[in-house]
Image (cartoon, rainbow, N blue to C red):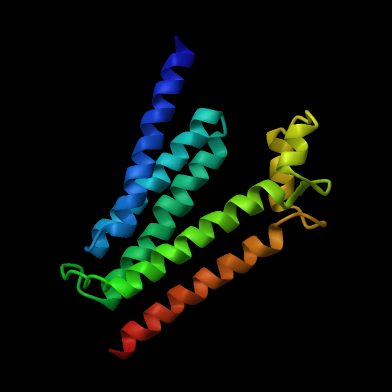
Length: 175
């Protein structure tokens, strides 16, 4: 009975995440988009709790759903009026956005299945060889500093996000 409830919870939360993700990028009101993003982050934390990673779920809620969302909302409130609608994109920009998003999706799929993940083997190689991949191995690949490990890109992205937030605050103060 518990496994049926977990499966139902998984699909409900997955549906909420997908719907809120689409609403985040299609909403014309910026504070609504931030609220939808908050629901996506909380849904991700629910997945962590469901998998038994209570610490990671708590960090997801405290750092991302709490801290990062507060920074986003303050940045939004500093840069523009939250009640104004953003203008619709013209068809040229919309087509360009859809093309870039599709290209990004293709590149992401290629990266997931063909980039080296564990000991120089890609995910498809690991699956085809029957190798079991546990959470410790995945965690080591993400936060390790050796070859085929991704701590440096993760830290570079965090510095880039910090620079974007500082730039947004600077632009807002010059207005």
